[in-house]
Image (cartoon, rainbow, N blue to C red; front, side, top):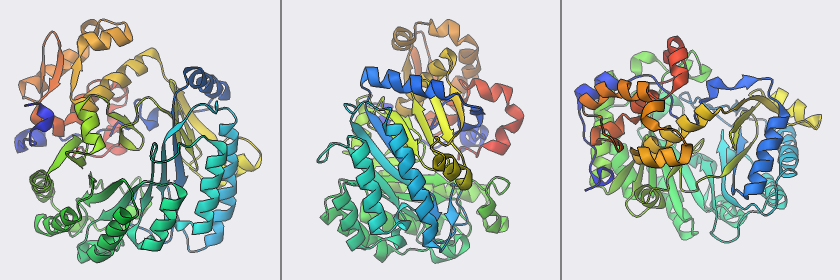
Length: 466
């Protein structure tokens, strides 16, 4: 039986040993490596390469607005009851979409579209219609159900009627941010929705023909216990979402101002937090969910699960994806685009973002042109984080290096992890073990050359793996 089809093994001693602070590797190199003073010529060159190769596109749209603050949140957001604040932002957003679309060959299809935030459904129906029509006018969205077009939803911000509107706009996937159904936990983090409301939305989504539903949960929140979270998970399992994300709450109030409203004394103790995760993994596996990796679960017949089995699963800034090798164009404040050998990030400050576009300039703040070494390490990390194995010969044919020579230091550094049973290394390649899947970030960190030069900052920048 493949390791992918096996229930996750739990070894608390190993988990304690390798539960390090480290990146989530939605990109490599990670965002802290991006540098200011980005040269726009590099961006145009990357666009030209994608045009020549007819690479498909993935579009991300960032809507930063929220009506209330969730204390756990680390996203780039703007809390406001003044709906007029959206108007200059949407004008800037549409101008940015037009400016970037002018560089794109129209033969390149949009395989993936995602609206994130913030709360995308903070926009009213008219604004969402106008924005989607603008995107459709500038980019070749695929017809029917051929694309994956999704958005994030706070359950309290929508009704079944609004879901009908979203479906009519062309969205076919939804992600509901549930986090926890326990009332005490919800009060502690200022995020409210109940099982009946979410169940009504899930039923409406299915009747409207949305082809995939994801529910987000967070473990490690204040007031949580293994018993209380088990009840939330029982309710979620009854809803049978196609996919489920079980995120680790990282309490980093030095980075995220909203988290300062959470009382550290109310957070579950480390041992209880581990118990919550362990019990949750068991509950989900017993309910038929497959562990994809990095906090993500999916039903055994889901496209994500099939992509992992057939070796086509990818990872990008939105997490795991079935659409591989897309150029990612991102729009909105703080958003990150990923083109051929290039990352570029917009201003994180909304005023700076809007001012740049009012002057008919793209709102780029930072970027990074990837070196040959970056590209090679990115392939290694993506392969391990998606498929938990790496074939040396296959990697060598792609990258024209002798793997065991180029990564001799890394292979030596992996030996203690191999001795502890996290992986196996032989002449053919690397195979992550069952318990190693849960600690894959620790394994990938060995290949991250930037961590070696910034070790003293790692604990401040990144959360713990579990």
